[in-house]
Image (cartoon, rainbow over all chains, first blue to last red; front, side, top):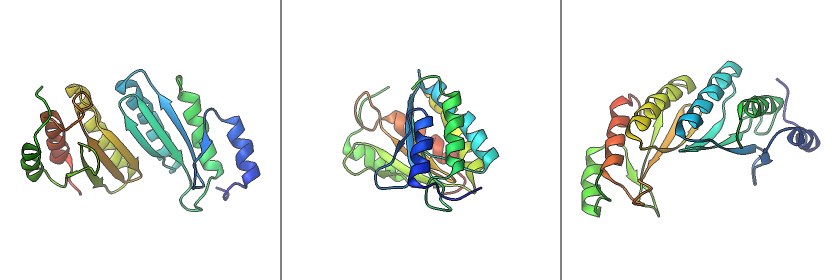
Length: 98
Length: 98
């Protein structure tokens, strides 16, 4: 699956994504998403859950009502890898609101 | 729906629940649950989501892989109410592992 992205690689990939940023003090990326209501937020989470299971690569995430905050990092290498970028791209592709 | 529980009421209710504790610095209660894997954790979250929608009373929650951490509080009264206790009881009733 490839190893940890270099700082340059990560910066290049982040610039192609929508609304993702580096997490302070951790080699991880995060994005907050806002939906119309809980129903829409949890529907989104369910789509991400199915994708994550398919990839065997899971997010860290927090939800309250219509807000979902997602952190991606690859625990095996303790950093951001191409798999995080792939999951982030999927999330961007199904997120209609931000 | 009833207002905020008094400190005595909250303590009495907490003692009847399984693994819930007060949140430091907030009028809220929380519980962490551990499952076999992500599939089981997200299945649990889906059951809670359906119940929450039915009650129109939603949790704040964090998930990473097989762990779910849930915080309950009633935002309208900024404290713990009978509805939080009801949702906590439901969570306890479907949580096979802790």
